[in-house]
Amino acid sequence: MDAAFTAEQAEMRRTLREILGKRCGPDEVKAAVRTAAGYDRELWQQLAERLGLPGLAIAEEYGGVGCAPADLALACEETGRALLPSPLLATAVLCAPLITALGTDAQRSALLPPLAAGGLTAALAVPGPALATALALTGEDGAGQWSGGGRAGGVQARADAAGGWRLYGEAAQVLDGHSAPLLLVAAHAGGFARSRTLLFLVREDAPGLVRSRQAVLDETRPQARIQLRDVPAELLGDEEGDVPGALAATGRTAAAVLAAEAAGAAGQALARTVEYVRQREQFGRAIGSFQAVKHRLADLYVQVQAARSAACYAAWDPDQGGLALAQALEALRLTAGEAIQLHGGIGFTWEHDAHLYFKRAAADELLFGPVHRLRAHAADRAGLFAAPAPAVAPAAPTAVTSTTAAAAPHVPPAQEKVAV
Image (cartoon, rainbow, N blue to C red; front, side):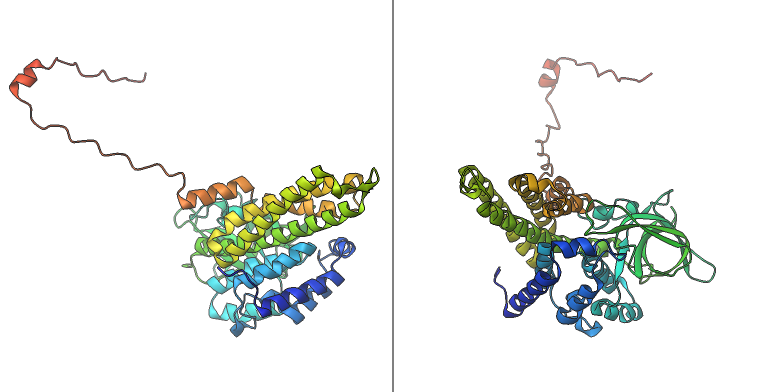
């Protein structure tokens, strides 16, 4: 594998870092998350027009750039460094691939061009705290029981007399669900007779749709609660589409992108900590010159570089996205925690931006992890802990001589135990 950047990738990275350096500082991030949308709309349009960021992984025939997932991961490494609040994850990483995989020709032609241009954003609504399960990051559920399973809870879909669909239920923890004009809602249909999970398109002005922004740990990833009260919806694709398979494929790419994003955030948190310990003096010398501080920073450097290497490999082979995401989330959590400690008293204050990285690490583990479940699922897929095949016992002799039979003692049959 060649991890070197191409000239186009290096230019995209340089331009993106330059734009975010000017428009996405700590103060700008805190101001953007307090807006109604939860992000800077003007900056989002600038990124869409200059770099085509929302359409990086969308085919050129639909107005996108037509790049590989590796290019999207590279861009998200830079957005992770700045903790950019934007609909990039929900729109380009989660929804666009599902529309491409499952949508009809008419749906792709109608939805993908505005998504690629940045004029339309979308959000994936999955019932309950089951996003990681739906994306097959922490477990396999081909039957789609996370969508409701025909029982109370989740989101249920039923066909109406006019040939359309109606949705009712609730979905919490929907990324950018309060502001996205288009919702992709995973719902259970068919009851127990034809139990299956389908994806539906719901517009923001649909009657019966109630959206409310939630108070979350990480404000740079705004979430909403979606309530559907007999809401008209359009089926994405047809009823024979492999929704669990499409979600799992999307989850593999999303894991690689999230790993790159987390690695970028961890690298930036470490860089800011190194800069601080070089300037902060104690006992007449910079605290970065103390051996104990050097050892802690060296350990963090190893963690960050391992996470970045894993993220680069996962961008090349998305099947390894789960392991890379586990490595990157662990590195981000450790680096953000040490950053708070090494910044001393100021690191605990609300005004300092160290807590933003720590919140990103904790929130991502809640949404897409935790780390130990990501690794356990990757181990299960690889068959690391599969039980070995039982050894074949030698065949017993089929005949005995009369002398042997006579010499053998008589053994009474075992008594059966009967539960009373």
